Length: 317
Length: 104
Picture 1 (cartoon, each protein chain N blue to C red):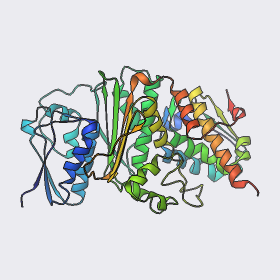
Picture 2 (cartoon, each protein chain N blue to C red; picture 1 turned 45 degrees about the horizontal axis):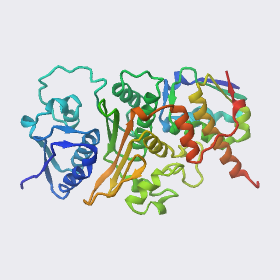
Picture 3 (tube, rainbow over the protein chains, first blue to last red; picture 1 turned 135 degrees about the vertical axis):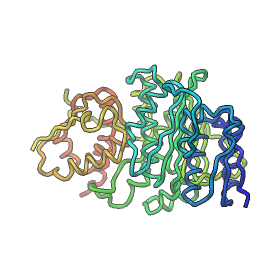
């Protein structure tokens, strides 16, 4: 039987993600798939992690998956440098010398519940994306925060393997970070929790996950302080507010659920029938619009209703 | 028993992983809480953290122990940013403790 052929478009920016998701999903029913990268000139971080997560899910399900078009791909070097091919399990000779990618892109990294140090990967991503920025700089700490929260979510809620990729675009002064996993999806992660009945559809589950103090781990009845109780589920809400405040963008895809917000305005749902098993979260932060990180964080927490009591006596010099 | 933890030695400069924060709370603090007279968390050298970590570790601890938490726990060497994160998480935990115990 002839494998189903998926030609990856020439350029996939974040706004073309729905089209990529549709293309990949058309291969779902076929027992064998060929991914063709011959035309590829640019893939945004979100596109890279989406393809990787889908590829690994197919492999896990026993689907035959192969990659073609490498010899014609103008941007093969970039795909090799960013370790896209390595994570597909495709090893071909590299006709270039690997240089430090700092300041341009972050090679793809992976983690799952069993492995992957969230703190370390988030810090590496930040250092690599913003090498000229001091670690005490507001932009640096904000990106480190967002990466840490997205990776934590993927590690503990997806039940699968997550791929993360980031890139800084100097001309537009934007930092893109994307995490996609081949796990259970947001709606499924709410099953067997006290919020199960609210998760409903993939769309409502995404919106539920964006609410502050909602977590598919914490709010189980009678949480035991020695085991299950984890965190308050504010990471994604805060990251969303940070994206808004930096005139950025937050996009989430999980099953046929879709959420896309630019500058705080939710975008119209694409007309195509999107489907992504697992979860994709992609954040764009606008470096020029990040001022005081500590102040932004305090503002955001106040906006989501988490006030600050007088705890002064607990702090000593 | 008096405890003091150097957070940078325990976790590094960036405290991000909520699960790790929860494990630390459960395995290093909660299991001996009744025998602990005071506990100091020294944040010297910690440059950044996430809400996942700080709420899993300190928010939950404050929620569990309420006033006893305020009496036993002290935070040292906090930058204004770290202090702000901790303060919000602890406030939220104490608030929840009061809600749980209101009318008891």
